[in-house]
Image (cartoon, rainbow, N blue to C red; front, side, top):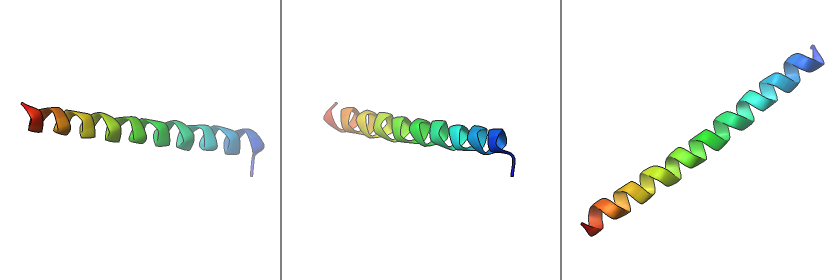
Length: 37
């Protein structure tokens, strides 16, 4: 397997993981504020 291809795939998975975590936190905060109002 090509090393640069492996690196780019790892970087893509890493950024997707971060986006997923940020989206989850954002949605949880939105739901919390919706309950308070």
